[in-house]
Figure 1: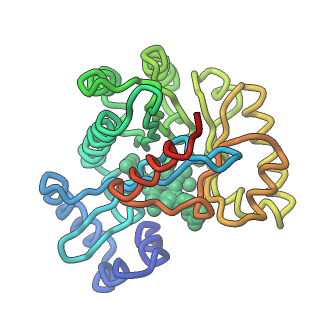
Figure 2 (figure 1 turned 90 degrees about the horizontal axis):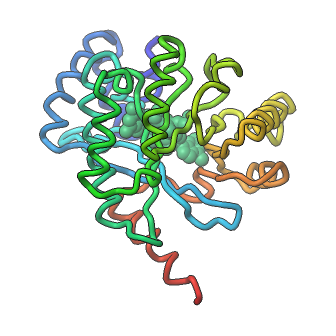
Amino acid sequence: ADTALHRAKDAGGNQTAFFETAMGDVARQRFRIERELRRGIPAGELRLFLQSQVDERESIKSAEVLVRWAHPERGLVPPGVFVPVAEQSDLICELGVWVLENACRLMAEHGSAGRELRLSVNISPRHFRLPDFVPWVCELLSIHGVDPSCLTLEVTEGLMIEDIDGVVAKMQALTAFGIRLSVDDFGTGYSSLAYLKRLPLHELKIDRSFVQDAPENSDDAALVETILAVAHSLHLQVVAEGVETVRQAAFLNARGSMIHQGYLYGRPQAASEWIPLWLKQFDQVLP
Ligand code: C2E
Ligand code: MG
Ligand code: MG
Ligand code: MG
């Protein structure tokens, strides 16, 4: 079974119809998505959505950038449908370029000194591995006049499975420039503690599968506590993903201070809707 297909179905809504005709032919469907996306990216059909990342007082510290595809006939398509397809080819690099350029634009346009807009951007291994990835990102920030520390790049453990020395060198160059690095979906991959120790990281994101079951499931609770211990000993910031309930938030808060992200605090929203929400916070700050 194809995971992109299942995710499309899980997500429900109009994207199910997107796939109905293709149930019998997964390969042809992937090919169609790829061809459509090759047309759609330059046609300006991608959209940036932002999801708040909040501190223990629930004030918004930053946001994760989550791409959507506003398809002219199929409506808003979630990334679970097209990102895995894009990842099979160089298309993921084109997508990654579009997302990071537009994220930089947002930071430059809406952020300012003392009111920095901090964004986390997902980076696919194939894009990260391009030889000129590091100079390209650094130049992009410079061109837009964005403080590099406002940008966090989220990578997955899958990046660490080959050419670890090359990955470490690139990460060092990125952090030397001031960019922050985060390991996304932490706990679902294969990274060993020995590797983790070698990487110049700033942040671990606890995968939402652990967060969601932690209050009820003692194995998941133990895993969350282990991840927190690892993060603490490596002096890393922790972001808990997929916080949906007050119960989950309380479980996490009892175990230390970390950043929370999840439906409890807000769904991913179009950038044009999220920015005013974020700006509103600053009005409430008293002198
Ligand atoms: P991710 O980076 O782990 O992003 C978190 C996903 O969890 C997002 O799904 C988000 O909408 C969802 N989420 C957040 N809070 C909750 C919650 O409380 N409950 C539940 N059930 N889900 C929650 P989304 O937006 O569908 O993105 C899925 C994946 O697609 C992302 O997982 C990421 O791997 C990928 N992706 C999204 N945007 C980009 C992008 O610009 N570039 C790349 N390379 N990948 C992207
Ligand atoms: Mg992410
Ligand atoms: Mg994640
Ligand atoms: Mg995840």
